View (cartoon, rainbow, N blue to C red):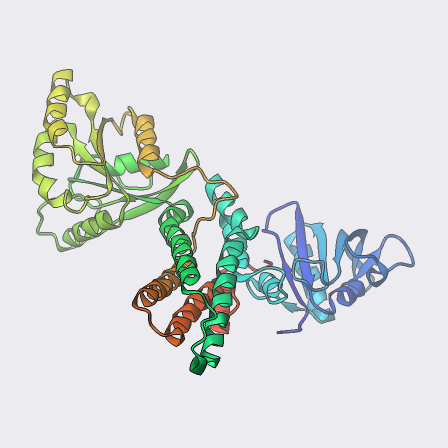
Length: 465
């Protein structure tokens, strides 16, 4: 592992205070070169661990700033190394001056995520916990915060470690059998192994299934806004986002590409996708947009089919056979727009047309996007359609694509173990599948992960963390 002493600004620009973090074998000595404590005849090197010291940063005889210095000694620090954190005023000039002094003193600038990578390398956390640090920094809702905190606290890792330990125990027993194969000795009870494989398959299946929920919580529930041209899709998007994100015009075919943005409604993140209006056209560019509309329908969890109330029956009959097959198994909400322009009798007629043919998992609602009529009720419909559970910090839900892919492979391996037990195959083949399952579980927590995977993970972190 790299033994350089690293430093970085750990706070965003523009704040009243700024923090510079230093970590490595020479962190304390380098900080001592530029820091003079207010209390005379003391240095950082003589200070006890976990203390705050007030003083000044000097560039030769020039005072740069008055600061507070936090001191952490190995192994009791975030990285597991000697660590110094300098809290100074948030001026970008001051922060850069301190950074330059530290680099002259022997530090180098930290790479993105290098502090957390050192914490992982020094066994202060496993890899899944390290990845949760980035998720915690990026959390934008109560649910994403709770999931990141749960993973940082090690709930996910503990569950995987328990499964891995049980598998390793049986692997050792089976491989011991192979050493005594000529004597036909069975150390690993097949009934116990069968029960263990069933239990592990149940747990891994639950974790794999949780990814759809975790991904929706982390990245937002994808909602496609579809319909014919001029039905009011872009106006609805602007109302939901509370900003003029999409161009609104009476001209047909204004939206030619997908427009995407997210918003949090009652703690749930939704990813709204406004699509090109569906119609027959000879415009090549518009047709490309319409093709993307149908791809978006396939990817969405919820579909808002926006219908112009003045031509509701016609628009439903025109698009029914094109949309319904793609919406199978998804939450479909018929959004009958411009309802302030129709009479109660016309509204009753539309209900009489829609109600008999409503597919499963579908609802209808009358709104006026332009007049913001019943748009709050539409938001309530979205919350209900999302079907996301209330998340606590004790819940183990998979949100990371890398973890999901490893779990899928682990699930396939343990299912082969189950099949092998039913077919009474030899212990060496069972051992191979058990080891493969163990490998993928270990990969998640970083016990077998290679350098390129680590580099890809930590490059996505911000500098200073």
